[in-house]
Length: 198
Ligand SMILES: O=C(O)CCC(=O)C(=O)O
Ligand SMILES: [Fe+2]
Image 1 (tube, rainbow, N blue to C red):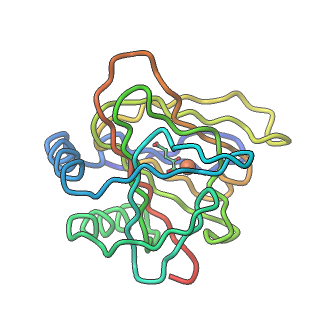
Image 2 (image 1 turned 90 degrees about the vertical axis):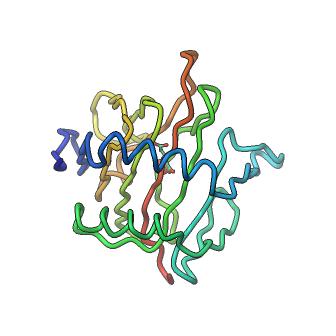
């Protein structure tokens, strides 16, 4: 029940595989899947609208608006249970967060491509706390072009795990949640963030 440091050069990465109990994690996963107004957003890719291969939702303090893949997102007001989770994550990490992006990966076809969370709203040194619920999926990290001469890393993020990415992780590494051909159930991921102006 504590974060431990993962040895990765030019990064500051911490993992608690058992941040939430399996029972609480499963209950939260079921409840959020049912209660959140999930949307499938599109991103503009080479001038074409492409549906994201996952469902998303965005909650936060008033004014914590965020531009994600060229889209401006106004946050929904905190659900009680998300606010409670935020407070727990803040206590465990020692960082403050004013918003959370929820991703629902319905099955192994849903995914997230390689990226770094380095949008201007996140400031020069973003800290991101990532809570996973439901099916275990492999989260991958690789050095950014010109980044450290280091091997890519794969982390199996299980239900109730908390991953903390502190600076300079986003500056030197990219991450992704690849598709899998394994039969997997739904996975929910919550990334708590601090958005400037919120
Ligand atoms: O689903 C995950 O574990 C990663 C999500 C992520 O990278 C993001 O929301 O920026
Ligand atoms: Fe990310």
